[in-house]
Length: 342
Ligand code: UDP
Ligand code: MG
Image 1: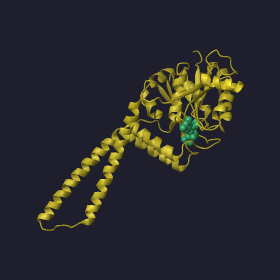
Image 2: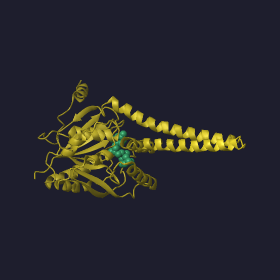
Image 3: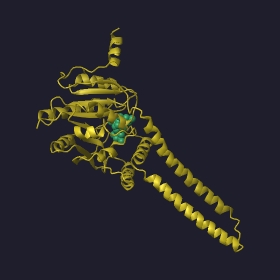
Image 4: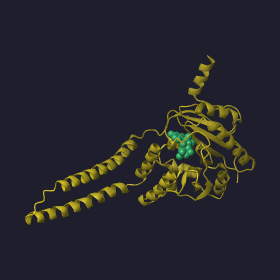
């Protein structure tokens, strides 16, 4: 079998501190893969700048000049991790035999990639990188993550346990994935829906080697909520059930009140009224809010906004001479170049 042309897609948001080292390590790995015949000579590493506010794009441009196989893709604004991954994958989809996605901070062990490729050679279209331990995560992150997987499982979304966005997708799987039209992306829930022969590869997750997490608690919670509401309508059904339960309880209560009244014990219960008003009011608000989540989702879905906007692609198509500047410099960049010259 001819060595597959692979693309390693790396989403980067304010990663100026880690990128030089990341590119160096990925470059070293790529050289080994090419030399050992596991990857085609025109395989690429595509660094996706997700609208960073720091020097990330300048660093990426520099790296495309330094390493023959490094490409740069610049999004016009910060589209978020999932959209940045999507932008990278969909941009290289028709050029790649297989795409591997990995975070810029290299918390995921790059040495698992040869095993990804081994699985791909054995016919897998989807290979999941799975953490064999979470020692480097805080106990809080580890526990909340595990509860979350359990919750998602109960809600009916099949997630791969302890797998994030470190994975390989073959061309066929990418093609299938590209047909998913949702604006609210939750890739780790979508990929298992594809089917295809798949495999899990275990690796040890390390620490971010520079910079800090781009996923503060607020973003993490938003992402968790995204996963639930994108993949399950069970919460709405739960609300309905809760409503029925409360209605029945209310009826029983009413009956009891009437009986007590007939017996002459009129209860002037300020406390019980206050309690029920607050409890029922709270439940109603909660239910409304939850339904609002879905309505909001429908709202964003029907708008069909683009998931990301491409500003520049410094690409290196097959056959392009390595080491030089990317050939696919678009107008935007050319303009800046001219301005520089002027
Ligand atoms: N990232 C991104 N856009 C964002 C936030 C994050 O492309 O809006 C990238 C980030 O550069 C990194 C990956 O997503 O490559 C995962 O982020 P991070 O490592 O900060 O998350 P953590 O590992 O702490 O969960
Ligand atoms: Mg990280």
